[in-house]
Image (cartoon, rainbow, N blue to C red):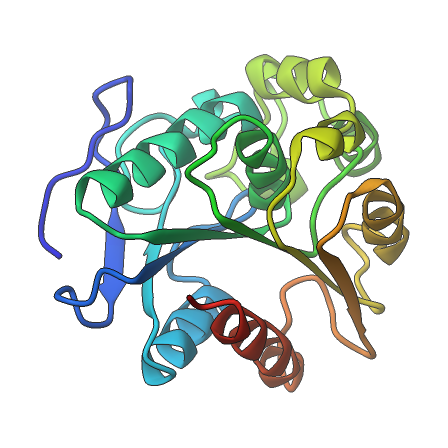
Amino acid sequence: MDIEIKNTSREKLDYAFHGDYSDTSMLVLIGHGVTGNKDRPWAVGLAEALEEAGINALRFSFAGNGESEGKFEDCTITKEVKDLNKMVSVADDEGFNTIVYVGHSMGAAAGVIAASRNERINMLVSLGGMVHTAKFCETEFGDQTPDKGFMWDEKDCPLSQTYVDDMNKIGNVLGKTEKIEVPWLIVHGDADDVVPVEESREIYAAAYEPKELVEIPGADHVFSGDGLQKMLDVVVPWIKGHQQ
């Protein structure tokens, strides 16, 4: 797959395709979390594992992140939803029958919102999914001044007022679950110190069938170390099992 993809702001989105482009039965889109990009080890590992299982995967960086165009300061969940919808639209235009979205952390919150509105998302997977956006922003960045401070003291990740306002406006994504009727897998490490595992339990309780919650013992927020293989052992068979 070698086409240029631009979002609604005309910003080029960086992506990597894994698989057989002639097989249009399924495409798994993989979106990252805040301050992340498509090259995070968990994303690369998942894409490679899916390809090995005979499933096409496409990992991409939201605008303002990684090698995608755009300003990091403009990156919000609301904008990520638009980026994700663009990727889904491209997958649809390219003839893929089943479209799956796997989102991590903030990217998972974007996935919940997108799946509640976009009927072309046929399956949803949330990894360490952020649920309470306003709470997350206050907990992680409450000691920083918007437009002056930084996320986790990373100079390349300035904390913008735009981001803070969007997180507070959304508040949480629990109310979106009633609009999601597709198969939904929720995966969370019980050693996650960024997004508490309780948030996945909460959104699972609010979700409708078909749904599944898997808690991975000892796994952290980014599924590092042996947490990666444990995550792959859950996600890949689940997606393959729902393949039509």
